[in-house]
Image 1 (cartoon, helix red, strand yellow):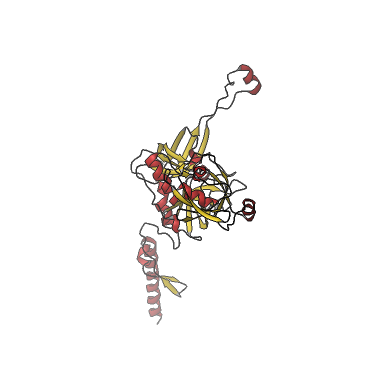
Image 2: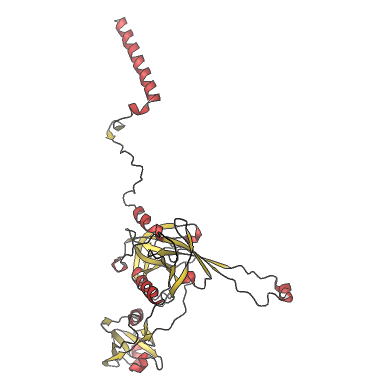
Length: 385
């Protein structure tokens, strides 16, 4: 019996020694099969493919699809030189004036293989030089093809090969609560992606642009994001990030983007004609209120009331008067001032259009022939990003 136990102990010792040697020199020989978790559950580790896959619910695929087409825009503007700066007495009292160029920063989106880039007008307004930096670190000088201050959009063009482009989405199908990504170059730190949802649609009367129909989002937007992309979960462009409400200069969760439906029309007009042509009739409109209706003695409960008519303008020539309420333009019902501006702007200059009016207690129709809208200066929020 003692001999049997001696042989058994020697065999176990040899086996343990062999296991130790194999596990040290060839560990993969003893690590095959399932891995035990506490002797209760066994899992099989999936083989590595060498390519990381997005986690469930991740927006990485959308960011990877859209990011290459979002660029950084750096602008410079020569400093204004005081004509007295060469006067020795002026320099004695005021010192040498700083004549360093003014630098600007923004973002843009490549929308065609020909090198057309959408951005904000306020990003490039007044710039003497514009440099675009792609996500792959390539750089190119850009020229302005055209601008549209009324929507705060501009179209640039660069000359480079193999340009990445973004797919244009359908902003008219967006719904409040949809997930979106904002892509740009905030504060010049480099391309940055933030996420959020569509907080509201059709925001207007904000005093940012003449024509407003903003997408509101809580995706973080900061200075430098202007002109960047707002994309959906598939990486399609839904808007051009334009402005924020902020007390500190940084994001407070209220950002605004121009819908791609508006941007696409501006892009087409600028590429085709170098400018955007809109209709204009020469009136001062106001939202209808009980007080204004009583002041002008008009019996209307909907529409936009005209409080001023430009002398010899299209509306005046058609017979419109202060106190008239515009209820319909062609086949479009008019409910507020922004809707009237947008509808009239879409009219073709030189082509007569029927306007439905309420004058006092009477309804009538007149034909108004719009003319091209005069250019207007860009209005700005206290906080632009």
